Image 1 (cartoon, each protein chain N blue to C red):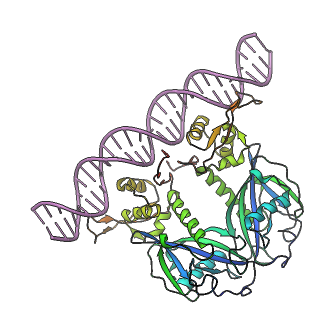
Image 2: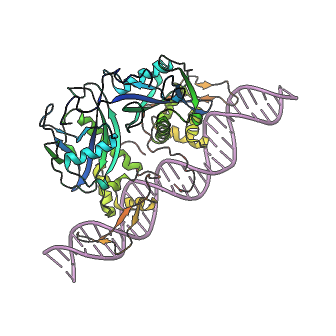
Length: 239
Length: 239
DNA sequence: CCCTTTTATAGTCGCACTGACTATTAAAGG
DNA sequence: CCTTTAATAGTCAGTGCGACTATAAAAGGG
């Protein structure tokens, strides 16, 4: 921070890019925009854009999300910094440093193309490949982070509407982890963790489906899970 | 990423700042440099500096560490991105975006002032207060991250020399967490976790201390701890 | 040279958590 | 009315971990 001179070094452009996840019909979806200009014109990319001189990267992320995808009701949006990508050559035109964010949305309001992007669309995670720039890597990093944070935080409720059933919460885990969980055990664990969820007191039952109606819960006040809810070991490790 | 124009926005300066931790005599220390210029001249700060046009923030972090503190044998250095601080007004002179890193060093080679900084010094963590810029906050964030990562990764070995005793490894946890651990239980847990440590086969005993000499171990190949090694609950939560 | 101190290592006991599984309840659909 | 579906309740055994006791191997002091 010494040897300071305002124009001693070539300036950088700084962008905020977002990997926004949601669950639709039990499938993990990510929000993508279609690029209208070169480079990578016509390719899909993560929404994002330049950080303005008077705002932090977090503010830029929220603003760009609204501008590019029409998602303005970002009240229930969980936004969290992922990491910063600064390798030279990320952008073929100039030096761009991207602060990447991972975001989670409860329901999935339809996205529309905004002012900047030609089109915005929810895309199944597995179909989001060959994105522009290094966005494949950013998206994979974000997905890994979300999966890991489900283990030791209450993040899963950020995928759910304000009131939800334990079955819906379990679906979040099963979808993100790609693994099936035992329902009674999941229920026992969630209810035994203080502050994870709290029961909705009234006539809190949701009907409309086939079987017995489920009780409704709200997200609790806890942020971390102690002890964590570990994902089933795929193979080998007896832990 | 559209509406792209090289000079459409005021450029940003990008720096890489480091919170470098080590353990000396059972006390957590952090590496600080004394600022030689305004603003904050004479104040202590985290080492760091401008990212050059042809390098990534990670490279800049390693380079600045050597330039400012004389620490060149960064072979055993564990370096990991923390997060990026981009709030306007962080630097009173211009818009600076800082990519912050947390780093861990096994032993503590003495630091010297480098080309940029007036002086570099290892400081006990608790004495590192009122740093320049927003470095107090960055340092606190880094410390929190290191403490949390000890729970579910093998990061603790990064504080140890290539060969170490289980007592030394336990000291790492106790120092960073500020809590005492039961020695037999710690030992059982570490040895039961495959890939955490591996015994040094030969006449692997370290003498010189008072009591029975301890067996030596090396860092294993595992990166994560399954199940995690949770820090003792300070109070309340029965987990 | 013995005995105390110090530290490493080995082992025990009980509780809490979890995985696997079975049983019951309450709705919808034919 | 009976079947299907899904939620909820409960059981049981294995495992991990906290708390604790016991033994082994060195240094140091008389």
